[in-house]
Length: 389
Image 1 (cartoon, rainbow, N blue to C red):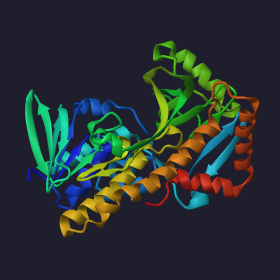
Image 2: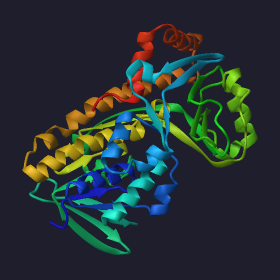
Image 3: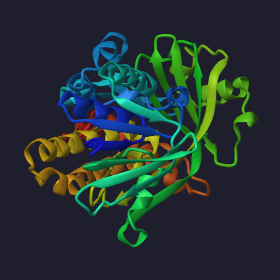
């Protein structure tokens, strides 16, 4: 074999899997379509479940996160001027960490470089072959030359549009999808946050989220129609609309400033089953997409890595294939629970086109129930901080 595990995709899930395997003496090669600068330019999630925090520490890449990340004990959900505080720590004994996905990816690249891991950028026309044989093969084109790697296993960490999921025959895949009729317009700005914890705001004008990366860098969002374009939204228009969707006590603390990044992300829920096909395993966005409302995207990828790392380690070091045989079912059990939570949060906080007055009343009733029921708050908190692996 040329290596033990070929990992397709050099984002955080592929890098984390490689890091954990390498620390156990298992050789990997990572193939990534984009250049490293592009991978590091992606603005993504900023909330880590505590299980993800512990996984990064276990992988030896938690030092900067522990120095620079912000531990949050809770969050706010609002209905106009009513603010409901969900105290994660009091309700579950756990917290979350505010630390951006870009920073996680940067830390993992540095650790992988220090280990001397082979990371090949700029690959094209990837083909995954021989999955039912004694060894798998991966072909790819680099600088116009076709190359081939043989390996024991292939981990598909190449996202929704990657080749890995499509390698599983279409008649053997079951795909489940819900596309939401709106997106999130998000901006990054060097301004102070309006609150010491995130605010998920429900209003008659639509959803808004006040998030942050640090004490002087915010990531803020407003719900917009899918027909909107980034150029339709000046900074002034964004801040005005964002302010109108926040509770008054938060809006009066708002400090505005120029955006340093602005984008619109469509929302969808998507799961593809199974996550294993012969010697190929799907990880992260290659297998599932969640709306960002529940902060589950990166965290679900980390839990996939947890299960797959254990399974591959046992198979390659001791010959025990129990873990790889059970990987798909084990990971999907947690994935569907996170899907339910993200769907619940999305429907509870967003306005839907053409909805009737009953829908708005249900959103208000949900918030009132959270305000009055510790049991309801605990259920939300348990899901937000992350269900056990």
